[in-house]
Length: 323
Image (cartoon, rainbow, N blue to C red):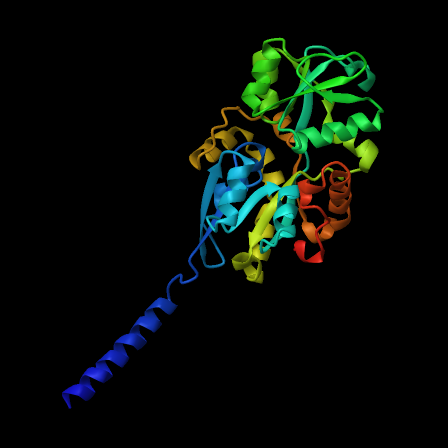
């Protein structure tokens, strides 16, 4: 009798646990990671208003550098990340289980310097400092130079009749190189562009996105987007809810520029810029579902493939890449 009573109590207890947990959030947590800088702005409205989504609690992480973002996603430390779309394509082509949900950054790159440019030809004999050989700024600028038939070489000193491309590790080094007079121009991304213009007295002399469009096609510069792990993309309700929130960000952020720095710093951003509508407009934020702009993404990837095949994993991603 005692044995039977014990068994019954155990069954009742187990049933009670099931009932109680069924009334709570059993879905768990979604970690969303983003590299510090302009990509952080793509999550502003979500960071400011969303703590839970479709039964999941949301944790935001702002990390330094695209490499850190890639590593944290591949290791399972994040369920969603904003990363360069070419990095997402590379990971996918290497067998990482992911999908690109949306494109959210449509280019933040600008050429800055003290002297205006009459034309791309004016860059011959000049030194341009840029970040990372084979990176997005490098490949984008080379595509523009090729479009104008302006030759270039790698180097830190001027070369007659060519553009000398001096590669450095990061934006602070690029700004320092420019300030020291070791380069005539620098390729930088917002919001660093604003900092450089303010602190160094330089100005924007070329919009890389606009120049790219002349040679590759209108609206084909697609720099970064949101990548999902299997845990997220297999949950259709969560995916659609996330896309819906992201789609409102560009309009939302323009109504609250004075609040941007405070919100993103709360989650770990080191950005010190006091944002204005003008600065935000140069960040070219938006939200396009990846499958809806597949052809434009294909044009972007094809242009990269012609320069640096390994930059997208050696081939164009197949249909399974696009959510």
